[in-house]
Length: 202
Figure 1 (cartoon, rainbow, N blue to C red):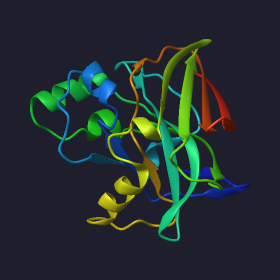
Figure 2: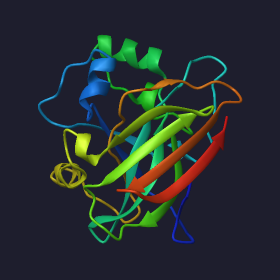
Figure 3: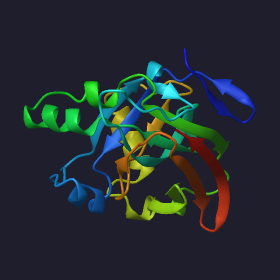
Figure 4: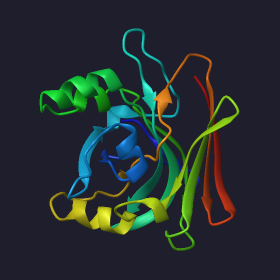
């Protein structure tokens, strides 16, 4: 089992619950339709990693996301996540109406910073992602089509949350290709308070 780090402890999530198409500008960026309900898919524990990897065959795209850790039946902590995606494969699968697992749930496709306890509300959480010194993504809860608590409740309506599970809440516009030796820096804020800074080198 692959762990994440939370409050000086190693936690082993049973699953990562992901949300697609939760920012209007990202929906437009990929020429997708706006869904009536949240688009939900899963990544297994084997997808969890602390490193960003490239692929020898398929191009991988980065998608920065505000991510939450679930404990005692509620959202308890927050971290910076990267949903790595094999975009060409995803497009092929979507065109045929097939599931996305080959493009989304492969090994090391869910990369996380440490998680920190939530001490304030969620409304002012926002993220920034730099790639090689350039700001490529930024967005926050106030731009989401579905707020984190609504996503949590939607998932709970048909699937059980286990302690240590992770909720990824979707990505804002600015996704792109991961290249060898890229340096990514993810930052997570609550209003103006910096909660997390995480650096990854591919």
